[in-house]
Length: 294
Image (cartoon, rainbow, N blue to C red; front, top):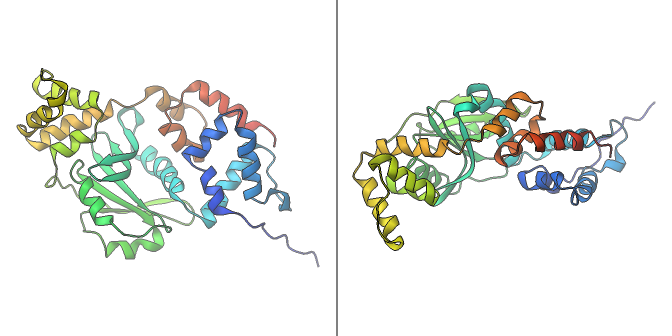
């Protein structure tokens, strides 16, 4: 009887560090790439693979992604699926911005989408707990109108019992699919102009004020921030939010969007490519890297 080949033991926690935005930066850096590949092969127990051993960097990354999908669904996998199977299927990048790790009040949203609508996505993987969740969601409603919780399908019942019904629910399946279980209701009752302004860069909040009153206040630098806050307080908060979202959309990178739309980029790299704002030259370099034998 022929023995059945067993899958080698994978160091999933360490592997997850490489399948991330920070990890992919090493992949793109020539001097650090050999170390990156060596570590990935070690974490995958590459030497112990009896069948289907990867031959190229592309195959190695695909193997790592599938291993993590089975054993260690960390945050990057959720974000990757969110972009590939939710954002790109429902929206056009020409008029859409997806922000990664966006600070709102005392919380940091995992992802924020702004186009004709505006949504915040809070991810709770199987590795997370619901601690501080409702505090985070309350912060998000200070700047955005729809909030979604993105969890694994097996955790749906648990989180339904924790959050309000206005919070939308998106589910991540074992097969890596994304399903919208409950649409988020629009809630503008908690919007706060000061929170919106504080989430922007200085040049952006000055442009926000300019878009509302037609000028930037001529005051000393030490008084500029408070003066801008006072100006925003004179406008209806939903009007401030409208201009705030327009300012955020100015961060759209047309070149990055064009590459993602027109070129064949591996799905597991798209989120990193998008959030790092890479261009066509980066893509061409990446294609050569992916085809390299290991």
